[in-house]
Length: 207
Image (tube, rainbow, N blue to C red; front, side, top):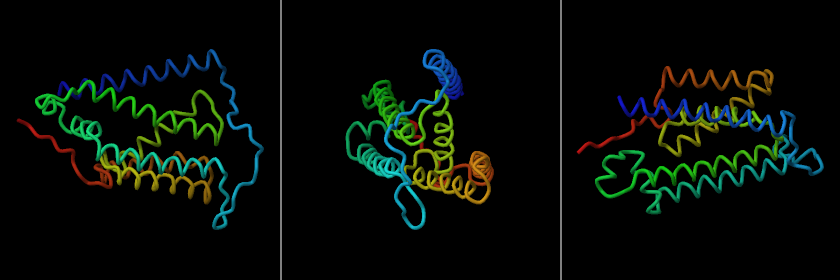
């Protein structure tokens, strides 16, 4: 119970910090859209009847490379294995001499780096405003819940499902329905498949 309260406290604190930083950026840099990619606007490359820009191709390639790299890091390095162990049972890791605080800081730095890369790539594609990152955050959370917490394969499946549903909604309905479809998927999974695609509960070993 105490651990759940602590997680809830940090969740609320992080959201509050996000709001403060967002408004600070708006105060000093303004709310207008900042153009990051100054290259000449082109139609893009036609693939199977659809058009994709160079920036989007780079985004896909970088995302795949990072996904593979992070998976290799988590499964084949000592630090990665420590991160997985601490996420499963920090108390047991402390008994074996693994510093949970140090591992959490490393995981936080790794996650922040990945989020920064995602933000830069997204800004290169759609330009940047002080609030544009919040939708990316929400989509990431939905994809994580749909895929299943702790499952990298499930995360990939959840991301593909959310992205496909969004673009089908934009194509057949309207772009205004993209967010609505995302939250409908989230609600359906929370009701009928709360553990996501993985269907596995996080294991916790007590000693």
